[in-house]
Length: 291
Image (cartoon, rainbow, N blue to C red; front, side, top):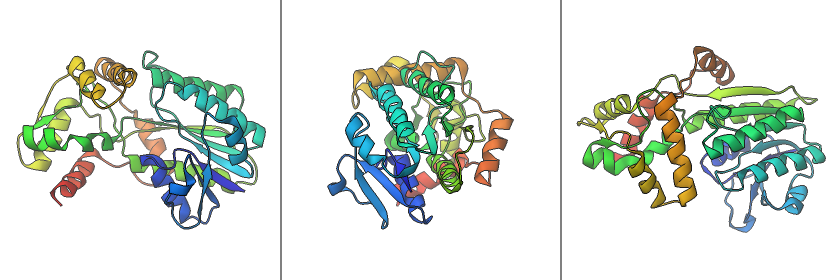
């Protein structure tokens, strides 16, 4: 029996596939183009598309455990719901689903609401799943090299309420732990959920201060102009996605997304260590820029 990883060529999926490849598990990586794939030795590339029910039926044959990651897309909900239905029909015994923090609360953010609907299906169908709810990724800020190093600006309009951002590597670590736990269990395990957050409630000004210290220069928070943010995102992504990101940032500004002490303790127990800190990510990123 195998572990099937969707989203296998993305930032999180690649980390998961690489870790699973060293675990001794039978790993399959779902991709639209197996002939172009470059997975680690021992990982089987499997052709599939989450919107193609026939291809997914074939991909799920012999699969015991599924990692389900659906990228932000207009048809995200259809992809996720259909795949879970097909997994149930195929007799999959364990699922790890990547949702998002505050999925039940930020109902005006389309990809949050889509993920909440998937969580409702998991609950109502009593699927044997672990739901992982990550916060905003540290690694999103790695794209800000020029504003930070040239203009001295931290440009993500996260506001001042606080967001407990998370390192992508912690997301992958948590997913692998749960995938292997479910894959190695003799029977299906009960549902579980984890908030995946870093230990710090980060604000625009505090993030600017971290980068000031890291870069050894003055960095200030550019502020919360959502019109400018939406316009910037729209220059490199579809308009619907730019608005979706704007809606998310508006909720961060209005409500924040701060992890509780219990959330951090629960994640620390799962990982066997504290989650990574943003300041360490910033230092590592700056060293990479210099190299």
